[in-house]
Length: 96
Image 1 (cartoon, one colour):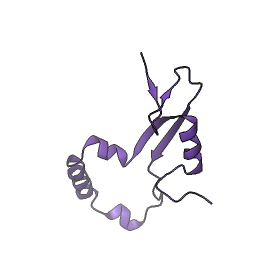
Image 2: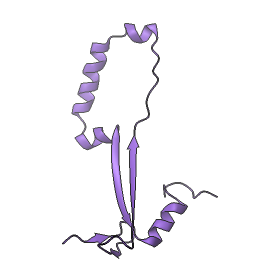
Image 3: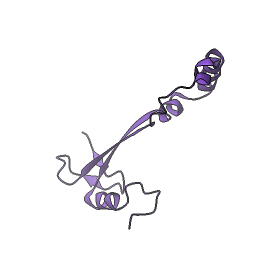
Image 4: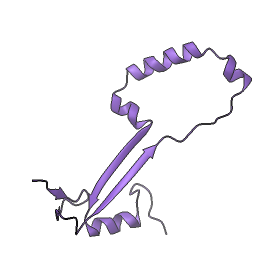
């Protein structure tokens, strides 16, 4: 049996979804600049790629993925949903 709990306060949620909200968040890296200079083209790209591969080898797959994309899903009760809407990021001051 699947059991749903609020990810905010751990309250049990109805299996039929009648008393909860689903929050989905996609966090992904913003695109960098798309213009190239003559210096960009003339750089030693092989050395840069070797360094990048060495850096990646020292990181876990989760750390690498977090630098590019992460999908999050939360099940919230009505009270936690209201709190989320008031301050979606939680770590930042609530909007006035």
